[in-house]
Length: 315
Ligand SMILES: C[S@@+](CC[C@H](N)C(=O)[O-])C[C@H]1O[C@@H](n2cnc3c(N)ncnc32)[C@H](O)[C@@H]1O
Image 1: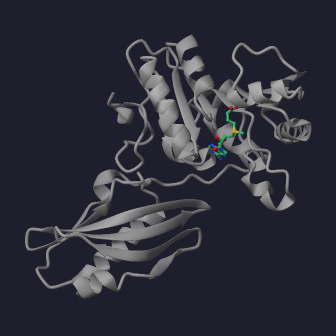
Image 2: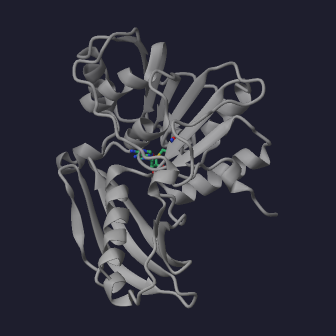
């Protein structure tokens, strides 16, 4: 069976942002699940709420593919899946104030202090949610880690605009996720925390992350010169400004006269690995984002493309 995964998985390099989540029969509501794992809960949520747009965000590529197949095989039309760290994807891809429910099921707790910044739930995340939840929208956390639930309650209680509306030990849930089933088999307790956003400005709003339109990242260079040396000189070149950095790693030449330059960018902590494609066009070269890896069109990505184009100009 061939899978039209791109019907469900959003490509960062080509999607119009913020995402248009509308579909026939949509009631205007949007639910987001962060870290959906094998996608069981995501698919359950979408099939139980066919008039709601359901968005899933997940860092693991294998999980993304598995969940997209599950969604397609169930014939669900109300799901979009984005690969990456939800703490950044939310800012890049969703309209502010558009979420009715945000669900976080059994997040990795990252118990070591030195890994604490990898935890999804944090004071910054709470402020982020206040920008993306609609007033009366709800955040739902389920975890098997008591201190994680406690610290979530603490973070939300400290931010005006949120009310903790439920704290339950071993809640009855209509669908058990893969991890939840595992913890239940092992006899562990589970904890649920639900928080309502009642409205109001966050105490310190999260900075928005600019995303450029696709047209803006397509560059043509009209020089018909022998430029291979200049293109190869991009290797190991770095640049950027505070908060937005890029580095080129390697340059690969293809048989068709194209070059692929591997690049890493970081925007305010959001890291992306992708290729810049330099290809013969007319008498010169064009520079564009290679679609493999689906990078989002952030400021650092734009700087990397401009740097590549600059190298062609001096060739
Ligand atoms: C312990 S698993 C739980 C999976 C699923 N929710 C369940 O209950 O079976 C945590 C999942 O969150 C994903 N994840 C971790 N940090 C994330 C982030 N910042 N954004 C999106 N997904 C994340 C991981 O890749 C992993 O699949």
